[in-house]
Image (cartoon, rainbow, N blue to C red; front, side, top):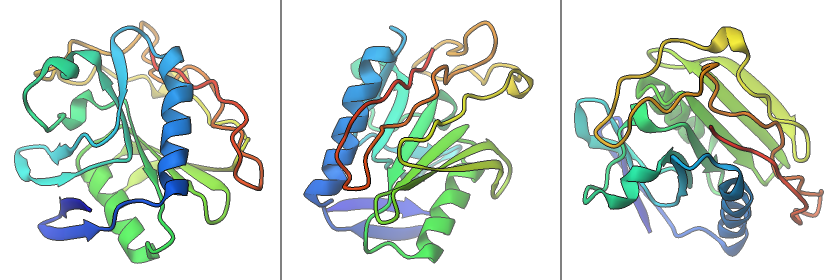
Length: 196
């Protein structure tokens, strides 16, 4: 069972199905070889709302600093997260999905990738504001996931307790453009997503 506190509400979810877990494993295994040496792909790492460690979410997959592997804490600061990935479960309802998306934006997680195996689609949320993301890109399995354009490069996020500035010289974190090329029957074919 997964337990989170989203906006002060206790949220308990059943353990993921084999298909759900398989999507996360396939994505993690495809992303890891392309990560820069300063990043790692984590499962079951919780991200707190800034200034409120009792309000946290646990993404299915989190790209964050490799240094976190040596941390005794269980919370990875939102400003250290390069990408949070949520695989939508069959039982999730639109209201809950929207509330969680708004939570990630309020926490200032810079990029949220939602994968919906029910429809074979994905959504990439970028440019968080107080309660939503300003940019949303939708696609289907096998379609490219865009990298942030150079105009999206902003000043580096604050240094967290786990990492120095994680951005590359051009301000980009995502440098490749493919999400797993799952076919309509949900079998895995390829990916080339990287974080620098």
